[in-house]
Length: 301
Image (tube, rainbow, N blue to C red):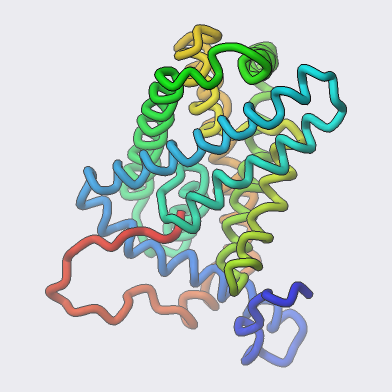
């Protein structure tokens, strides 16, 4: 077991094998549920939530521009290590989201689904969070792309060529391919966030995030918010159109929802006996004064 892996979830677990397993799952489910009270409070302050979501879109853009800058020369040299390098550097995006604190749509697919299934939030609040995070992520990706356009860092050269190649591949994929790749992508992204909540120590958390994100990038799966950033860069660079982005999102957003909400949230909720262990062991409301209504900065996604 990784040295930084948190053992507290099992320290007072039932004696049976399945009881211990359920206790470990329950602790992580509880971590996800405890974050929901913050989300419900931020829903009452849309402007603050949108800013947090915009930051996530910007951080994903940072990962994309790093990927293009590092892997572009390798692509120009016809290196076989392009996918490997892309996967190795892109995890910085999710690490920024998690450690700095921002709200990413793809992770909300898991978090809010836990809340709905455990009756700790409503379908309406989940829908609002999803819509607001999508809009905020898109706005952040566009703002970042505009700055990159002014900076001119990918206007020409290997980075621009790689950008064009990536966009062409996404535009050539069928709707079914985009959907399936998006399902697999967000399964891995949400597992990264899931394991982030179960690890202690920054080194362990970073390691738990890095591997699943590496897997989805190197495998060529589809992340809707990363595509927002990539297509926004392409639009600013004259290599893609708004219609290309819209078509991609029409398939990748639903796929990401299925990957996070069904393959991770619903699966672990069911494995945890409908979330009853988590709810009983981890109360949602923290000990805060009743008069304190200031929204807290979200440290989870």
